[in-house]
Image (cartoon, rainbow, N blue to C red; front, side, top):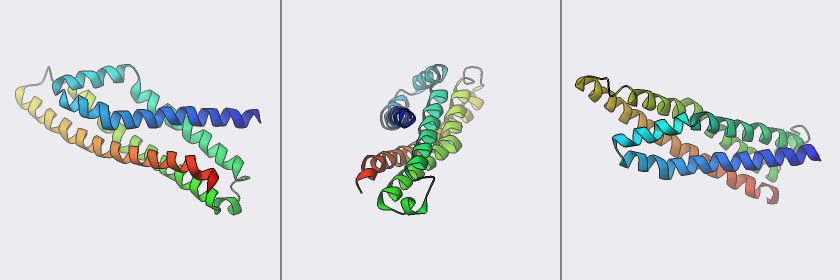
Amino acid sequence: MTTLILLRLVHVVLGALWVGMVVFTTFFLAPAVQDAGPDGGKVMAALQRRGIMTAMPIFALGTLLSGIWLYWRLSGGFQAGYLTSPGGLTFGLGGAAALLAYSIGMIVMRPSMLRVTALAQTLDSATPREREERMAEMQRLRARGAAASRWVAGLLVAAVAAMAVGRYV
């Protein structure tokens, strides 16, 4: 029973942090940073120095691993009878949405944002032509990261919704 309580605690707390940070970053922070222009890059660099690009994947992995373990326990070792039940399907689809969100975040969103930050740090020493090229690449990467971020946020909200109702369907 203690293990189950601990797993649920880890899953819910880390999940709340992961989803909350993604939604805040996607719909509030990133647009504000974009509106700030060149100074926005300083904010993103400061966030990176404070470990946001490390914390987010840790929150996500903790959420996913504890969720898989909870699903395994609840389903009696992934028994087909539970997995195909309404509750099992709901939890399973929510978990799949979270796994897809994590994959998009790690494969598309995170590398784009890391590259933008790296390029921003080289702008001061760049020639005018190099600066223009890097700014164009940064804009392309920001757009790619923003699109991925919206997908991640949507998938995570869907996962939370599934977790909220899975027990009752």
